[in-house]
Length: 426
Image 1 (cartoon, helix red, strand yellow):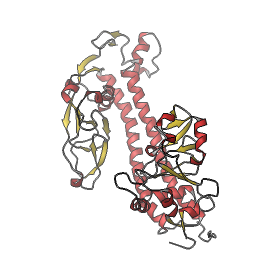
Image 2 (cartoon, helix red, strand yellow):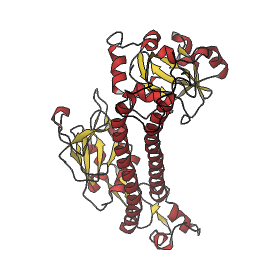
Image 3 (cartoon, one colour):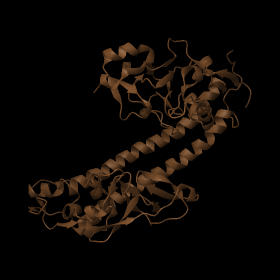
Image 4 (spheres, helix red, strand yellow):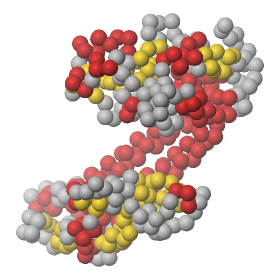
């Protein structure tokens, strides 16, 4: 730790504005009976995360009517404010900044908020500080209770801090924030790539847009060599009208669902092989079970979820993995086709839901012509390639951020050219 660093508490760095540190409304004052479709958003525990870089989860928000929200003026959080959980997952923190959908939120009755004094502390620097392992451990060690841990406003105010001068805080926040900005940009780009692939699948194989356009004498809006691959009429089938020349088959004739293999967490060895469970990727291993790319399907716990594995992978025993065994070799087509089948609805109704593969095998699937499948596969493969590249880059950037974070906020690694001689506050 270098010159200019000061020791203080969280209470020392709060703003002088009213309610700079406050809790959410008491008890039932903000219960679900007051939630409406639109209005002032409410931050709950589900909108915060323990993952560094996810400053606020804007999905799944609930709202209060504006008149109702005015009753909770002291519990309003705005741009630049940090939000903490005081009951439950007490080591998570959020930040309201220019990434968030709204400028103003009400915090729930299980949250606390801090408005820092910008002359003393940079909000983004504080976010990274409270996201660090050391600070999270500090909060967890002060937790009250066992089954549902608690952490109150008085405890938050008393947490000791060691802060560099404000210019160095901003420089540190800029370095870490730039890495997170690129990760966020990659995430948004991947959402776009995924949406493009889904749109092509739906247009070609659900809505049959190219066939419909040709049948009605319209331009199918595709390059001629691709448009020529689609028929110009429909024919009747057991699933209704389908493009002429296409067929219907059962999933059992098109794929096999092979069982994953048990691999306990303590038995996994450090490596670059993704391990998949029924909720998605659950870790890494040094040995593959299946050569990628491939498709994982949830079998137990979260049955029917369909997951894309871009590289070699290890599906554990709560999953199936897809083995093409029929006329469709396009894994990309099968991936979206399986999603369209809503496999989750086929899960057995039991205490531990499970997917019966024999029931899946009976489901009927439209089978396009081989030439159309080949074109679809080449187009979507390119989108998935870019998506995987962005995911790999984000993983590298996240690892760099996680390595730099503790070194920068502790002063072990100093930021060049940041003034270390600014006057500190008393």
